[in-house]
Figure 1 (spheres, each protein chain N blue to C red):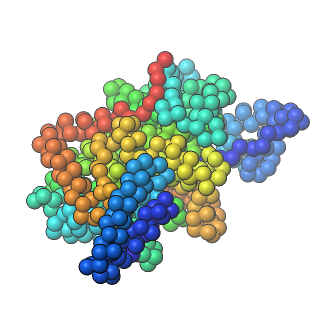
Figure 2: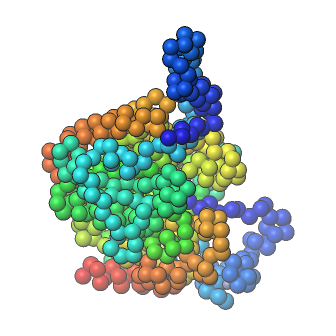
Length: 319
Length: 276
Ligand SMILES: [Zn+2]
């Protein structure tokens, strides 16, 4: 697999490429080669630390959208067993920007769903860059309702730039589709664990984001509007995205601080895309632990606590 | 999340004219302001429904003297010290001075044709009626109070969407208000949403579209994404009438379009039919 590098990773790129080439093609028994490899290893460790130690919100935004980053179906493949994908909203179409179905997690049958982005040009188009139409949210709702009827916990994964802004989407009720999910998820009598795995873009993200526990990966972002969109409106300059990313407080650490999320899921060094299995194992551990913790909570308390979770969000004074 | 561009600063002469006369956005008719007000801020020539202030709205739809405001003391704070070209705290102060309100939403208990209901109204002039923490809290409280008093709730929307200066907390107001409405629904108490011009973004995609009954004023712009964003995305012209109340009615998204002068009577009828 060709590894893609972000702009701020460029110093690392040259080192890692040389390292890979030496390891693959240079004769091992040559002492000059092994000395060079050793030197490179040290240098790479140092540059990696420098690169990833203090990521800015904008750099995390880029990481959250990294083309090599694991997507919902990657996590499903690595974390769940017996996944069977379900299709369609039973009304208009199957939306490939949202995927979901039944599966087994750590032995227990669950419902799992999430936004799905593509990796190559063809799949990106097919998945509409992870931007759902109303049918995507309705499919998600239908699958969750199936889970509720058969008493299965729900796991959702958020990874979308937002709901698709198009003519058909509006005509078929984009706003209403999102709104219904928010209302219904608030009262589903089964545990819901939400994981923001990549890009948490606005209402389209929240539409599958109401739950008992909201976890967020270390390099994921979650925002009311994309930094670029915000910059275009408030700075009247779409290139001011880095400033907006800073101001909007969109990183996992920010959201933990604001008590919007419950836990940050650490990523392999340099990001989830550098170690799929490592990332998946950490996500699995966290999701299983939280589901287990919520599993035996009486429904009334489960729903009361979920309500309070969102009820207390916001900041204001009472004079 | 659409924000609407303000006009450039008018000249003295234009200001003097503005004080007495209004120009209709649709038919361009110049209307004497007093006449416009007498006509509930509806253009006498083409029936365009001008946006109106929250207090005026309340006066039009509630029984005289019945409105009792709640949660007046809620004031916004700039928790994340947001600053773009301006500080959020400065924007708040300016909006408060301009409107005389603490934030973009007024709630209270009222009667409509002697039938009680909790009512909430957006003030679009306050930061584009954007949905922030105070608005979300006021809505949650009015819905909870409706449940306590076993009465219905009515919300008049006019909003550009979530208030991005409050970051993620503004987005979460969508979940908070929708969760409250889920409880109202479980109690079998009616919720009527009245969409007025303009209603977009997170407001449409939460309590805006969750009414048991969804009404709209004629010509109101109603949508999730703003028309400009859609146009930029699809790189094509939008269909005529797109995202207007009449378009939504045709596409099955709302129950009814109601003219402003019939609004009170219509709400009274709905409350009566749903209560009794
Ligand atoms: Zn007119």
